[in-house]
Each structure stands twice: as C-alpha cells, then as structure tokens.
Length: 491
Image (tube, rainbow, N blue to C red):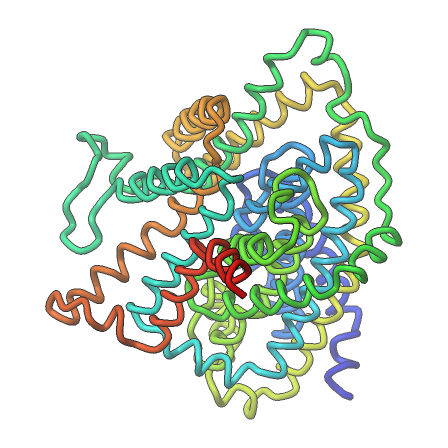
C-alpha cells in the first residue's frame, strides 16, 4: 500500500494535473504531437523525484492523445497523428450537429481504453513482450502491408481509388535519402527534400487545409456565422450509455491497440487505423463507416490510448522503446537512475507499482480534465468562421514548422492542402494516402534489410509462422466478403 500513498502525495498529484492540462493544450493544437508534449515536459522533471517525473510524462502523453480528437472532430484537423482516424466519423458526426456526443464518446472510450491498456500492461507485460520480440524484419514487413491493406477498408466502397491513394502515399514515402545506399531519390536537387516528406505537415494539409479551402468557397455570409452552430455541452452520461451498449467494440479495439502498441515502432497512430479497419471489416454496418456512426468513433479512440499502455511493455521489460514517446522516456529513466529491463520489477518494484497505479488514476482524471478541455475549446469555435479558419491556418503553419523548424514543411502542408482539396473533388479517399506515407518507410526498410540478411532469398517472408498469419489476414481483408458470400450460397 505504500506505493498508493506515495502516488497520492501533493508533490506527485499537482505536477500530474499540470502536465495533463498542458497535454490537452498541446494535443489540441494541430501538428503539436504527444511526443512534443513529453519532450517539453522532460527538462522540468530533472530535479523531481522519479515517481513525480514519470507521472508528469504519463499525464502529458495520455491527455494529449485524447485532445488530438477535439480539432479532428470539429475542424477535421487531427491534433496529433494518433487522431488521424478520428476525422472519418467524428467530423461527420459534428456536421450532423452531434460533435458534442462524438467528443463525449471520445473521452469516455479513451479513458476506458486506457484502463484496459494499463491492466494488460500489468497482467501480460512479460509474455506479450516476449511475443513482440519474435517479430523480425520479415514480420514487420507484413505488419506494414497489413496496415496498408486497411486502405481497402477505408476507401468507402471504391477499392481502386483507395489503393491508388495508398500507392501514391507509398511513392511519396520514397522521397529523400535512401537509407541503404545513401543516394538521394526524387529530390530534384533540393536539399530540403533529402529529409523526405514529413507525414505531419502532409496530414495537416490533406485534412485541415483542404477543409479550409472547402469552407472559403461558401458565401461571404457563411464566413460571418459561428464555425459551429450546435450547442456544445458534452454529455458524459449519454456517452457512457452508448459505450456500455458497444462495450465489446471498446474491449476488442483496446486489445488491438495494446498489441500493436507493444510492437516496437508501431505506436498509437497505427493502432488507431488498424482498430478502425478491423471494426469496419467485421461490422454489420460496414457501409455506414465514414458517414458519422458511433462505432467509427469508439474503435480508434479506444485503441490509441490503450496503445500507450502497450508501448510501455517492451520499454519496461526489455528496455526497447515501443514508440517515440517511450524512446524519450527510456532516456529520462536512465537520467533518474533507473535501469529498464527485466530486473526493474525487482530493483524498483515499489516505483513500478506506483507508476501502474498512477496510470490507472490518470484515466479517471482524464474525464475531468478532458471535459474542461472540450468546454474551453468550444468557446474558440463559437467565433466567426472567418476568425476560426484564420486561426486554423496559423496553428497549422506553426505545427508544421515546429516539427523540424523548417519553413519548407509549411510549403509541403499548403501543397498537400491543395492535393487534398482536388482529390476530394474526384472522390479519392485521403486516409489511405496518409497510411502509405506513415507505413512506407517501415515496409521498405524491413523488406530491404530482410532481403539483405538472406542474400536476396524471399522464402523467409513466406515461411515463418507469424508471416503466414499476416498473409492470411491480408487475404481476408481483400477477399473475405466474397468468401463469406460464396459460403452462404453453397451452405
């Protein structure tokens, strides 16, 4: 019980609450990621006790991941990469005047998914981490392909357009220095392009700036109206009732999120897309996804917060970061005199128990802090549309610039904004392109390293058990519907 008393001390709780409010602010600003929130928190924690320092890191990461859904729902601009999937149904619900309900669902499902993710972290950390370590380059290649196959699911009935968008994303991901040969590809002599196309400026442009371009096409009278007309009053009770009815989706998505999060390098953004894709593929209402249904809100938001718990599994057990946040955390833990690895549970058992307790506590505090964040954010959205759109462009530019301190990324954002606007005119889905840009490096790097290890032999990609399992899953993503229809016809 000492670890609970230690976690409830004012010198732990007060910094935790401050970090959570800070996370809400950072997550709600387009382009400012949860990783950035944690990176900005680290210097403040230098002279703090390890438990308080790690509590601040956990608080900032969980709250910023949720807060990214606020602009995603109201403005169609993901606040963080993990909120990319939230724009698909959350924004559509907002257009129907149900934005408050969508965000209330986001909040309760984020907290519930987070609890499930942390409980799984506590219960199955060692066995799940050992399984995650069985993933080699061959399995990661197929994981990337499986994630990309979700473009077939996200393409609203038009498979060809969805795959074309995904392939374009893959092509964009090849721009820059070839990691194997060191040779520049598709840079056309530009020094800025040698670093490649950042997916955050691209995502802000595709989803955010394209929406701004659509809005300014309206009449001048529309620009004088409030950006949102609905009365924003989050209804946690209504959201809780819906979540109870759809609790199986929450559990399924949280488990998917935890598993994907436990795979080093995957993270919350990929977890959200995979959970959304799996839910759409297995749902009886698959055709309604992307039109503003609650299932499309519940799945990704349950997964991305659960994935944060998953990322700590390889970090704590083996000292291997699950994502960029835990990569920073591992460095911070060494700074605090902690050594991540199997022995950490023996050498720092009380601290780890306290950390687990705080991670659970954060999910309950998130409901209070998140509710406050939604209310504050909506005051901003009650301003004139012209003012809101101007602010959106300004914050989008700041978010794009802040990642690499590059003006070039602002130009990238604007270019992708125009591309997104034009693609939507011809009904080409944007989500598969973002998936292609995110997963492209992972697919290519693991393919090339795998082939290098085997001297060009492709067989290990097709003969290892986990690889075979992914191949079967990919096959069912594309052809599962047709197989079920054939079986129904003959049985």
